[in-house]
Length: 69
Image 1: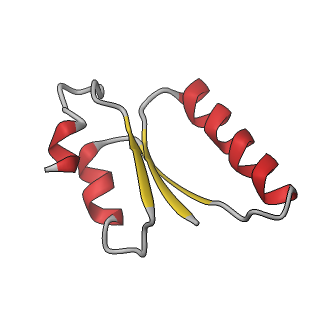
Image 2: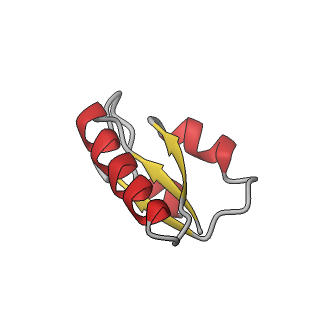
């Protein structure tokens, strides 16, 4: 499974990466694609993504809802 994570906080990114590694070690491979901005997320949407986890309040006055719509 490939997950797009749109998050601008390093500690939250690290937590998600740790969970993804844990599931992968248990035989359920998860590939995590990280984007820290909405612009970066749009660039990564061309990849094969199964699911997205999106922070609604991004820095630089960006809105995570923009990625959804």
